[in-house]
Image (cartoon, rainbow, N blue to C red; front, side):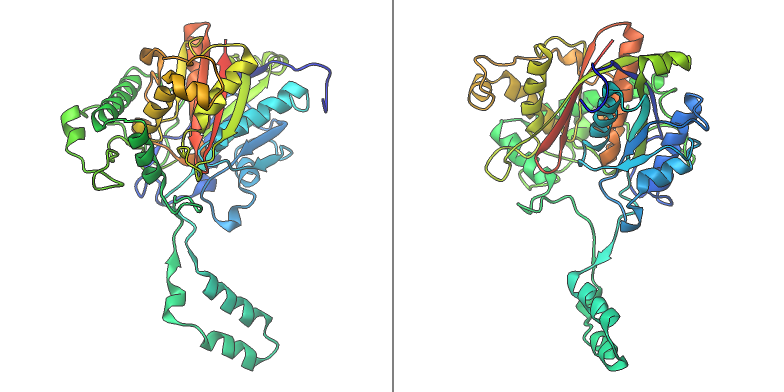
Length: 425
């Protein structure tokens, strides 16, 4: 161990986020730094941390401008925290802020720090639009030129095509397929029907709508730029409405805008600490983060792109000495309804668990009534790097309200990876 002689328990004190907004709408005038700052400031205000020096703030974004290379540090400098607080940027696609929470938790457990914040942010409305390689090389030639003639020759080589902008995409570099196209393949492989996906999506919207109406999110979400609630939640959705939507990724596909996450802008953050630090500041402990695990799959070689959590969870369960049924809540990120349903079906499959996981029996089914009980990404939205922190804060509050229990978190990511964690109270 780098510090200390025995691991300390890691408390989840609480989290805050701004409302999640459909892309090119409420947050079109701001970018990653402003939104991440707003969520960090909300955590600072909520827990009376103004001027406090924390051990670390770890956060990141999937899509960011090159000028945002120090995004986390710049955001925390405007958050109210002491400027002596270090900031660390990281990125593990959609698992970014859950990975950030695990990193902060590990530092606390080892005694390296006493408290830290994990977070994430993403905007589709302020993308890093760039120009192609050819244009870059021409500009660099002009920059290196030693004479006016050389510089002029470089610029004279410009062609209209050089000015065509390159927009960021969600396609996998190794396959050229989008995440939705990959998930269509998964849905076909696991025989997940359109009806199953639409029914799953409807429950997500209904639960999220009910959670907002009941005030569950009132102390987890702070108003921002005129928005006070997640604006993608459709409490009036129905199977009939969902059935009318056209496939989004293949003409004969089953994934639609209704059973997939929308492009979303937003940010979230969560405070973690040692028990002594929290107690010393009079802060409540909502839950403890006890385990974390990441995994990856060979999606180029045939496994589904978003199936990595199906591998990470059983490995984490082995670490913890638990079964899949030993949980009171399951928070499985809904990149697509089909992706969650594929994962659940894999855990129920004797063949998958034997051949892929090396188990002598299936992990088994979970109680769907315990799954994403306050809605999840299909309804709430999914600003890529922010989702993990949203889920940690949501689950910690659920466990605090229950008074005891255990919750499992599972987040799939681009690149064929997955990040998982366990919270307990």
